[in-house]
Image 1 (tube, rainbow, N blue to C red):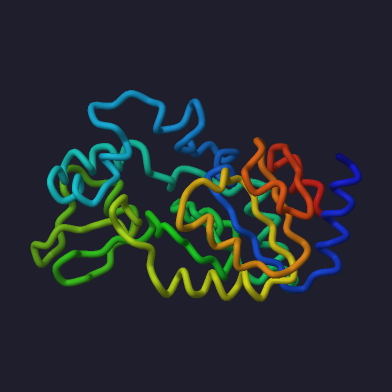
Image 2: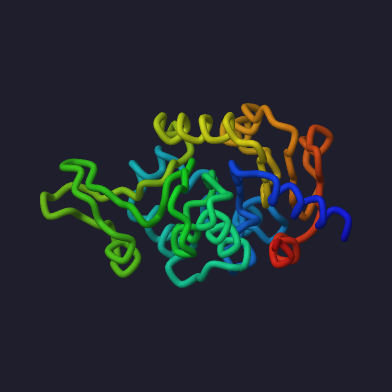
Length: 239
């Protein structure tokens, strides 16, 4: 393990265009539950399956029940960035890290200080009226009850990508460009099973592909360096 940490640090020192691609495992150490682990949201019992609740159809047809679940399970305002978020912000500040591409919607990368963050699945921090497009902050949603309604009477929707919805084209394009031009790609905290997001790492053309994840992934054989451990343990050793 020490040898792998040394290689990781050496590559970071050698690189000046690093991109970080992260999933739910980046935020679990802040206390935010993931979706697919044995203790994740998808393995808990609800009136409806979470995959159904977090779908566009459910939002449109059972909006109040959607928001009951959303407020209870998706409120990230009470959580703080962990060592991984903070180290990435530091790497960006010194000019090493050029972009964070995240599948998370919690806003913790920005809270830690990261500036260039491409949120593939949107963010709970942004909400908009479906009628007039007026923007609302997360507190307006999470501090309220029932269906949040705009001044114009329209229903307010979180700016998150629900099932049955496509990714934002501009965000995807920016993420692809960042990954394609990176001289080092660090992929961490993701099982790489969620498409199309996970397919974006195929655009990386360099020879410093690092996979850091607690469990093995189907992409491990393609990586130049694989570290199976908790992210916090690894990132606290990044110099």
